[in-house]
Image (tube, rainbow, N blue to C red; front, side, top):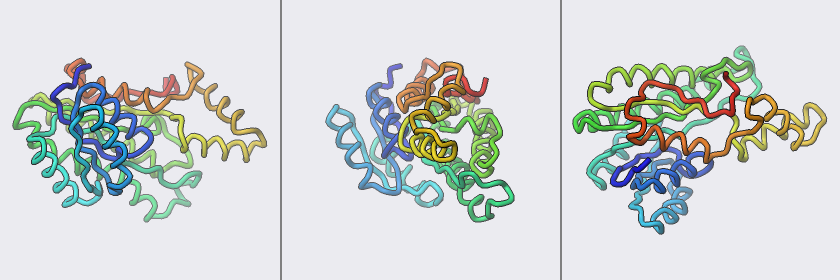
Length: 259
């Protein structure tokens, strides 16, 4: 999965899956435009990747702000001359454990704007250049709650289902210009967010967090929870020419939860 001489624009790169994805893209040879609201949080990762010989630029970008997205994309194209790969990682979780009736309009709108509209804005910004050059790879990070409904996660699930539709529609539009548009759908991923979920389950059921983690893993065919690196490997595959004949698809990386 050689990405040498490719330029990747990554949103939400500072931590968790975003950092793992950025490292994996760099490890495959790509140079990177790392875009996010908190540039100070991104700089340590940028320094780490520059030390490996990769060219890296850090860009301030609020994916929910159209002018901010346009400015960041223009800056990346000015620095590197083009964008070959877009990876949309930036996103949020929305309300946890609230029913649809309990979820406020503001809570619903906020997560839709971040998880869905944000991806629309970045894709809309990079596609003209990709289609003009007749080359591009777009990988959106979705979620398995966009493949199965989930009570208590109404706004998040709606945003990820919407992202699937956006991915498929733009795949059809961009396909004739040799641009692939796909999504990777993680299940639970090891890290602080999963630890919080386990702690909440443990408190609710009167068990230890370690026992809660085991219960989660038992829901999956492979009996293990994904790592950030598992997600990153899938993203690099879809960003590479090994996936040249794959577009408009949702790749679940979840240990076998949605099957």
